[in-house]
Image (cartoon, rainbow, N blue to C red; front, side):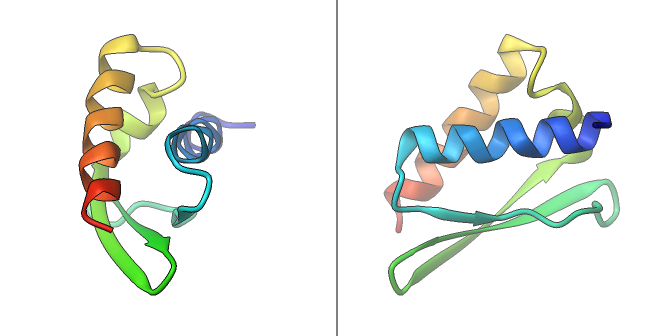
Length: 79
């Protein structure tokens, strides 16, 4: 498993841990070094962008994990 795959897996676990009803769709490759991620809950959908470096560092760096967790929590709150 490469760094991006590990980061995407960690991101999916993060989303499920915050709200199991939310479905996250993460692209396999970034566009312009950003991942455009779709979060869906019922009929509601929200798009967020996460930098490629943050996805790569997500499994290993607590600061990045905290930052991404806040972004995801804020997005889920609007669903």
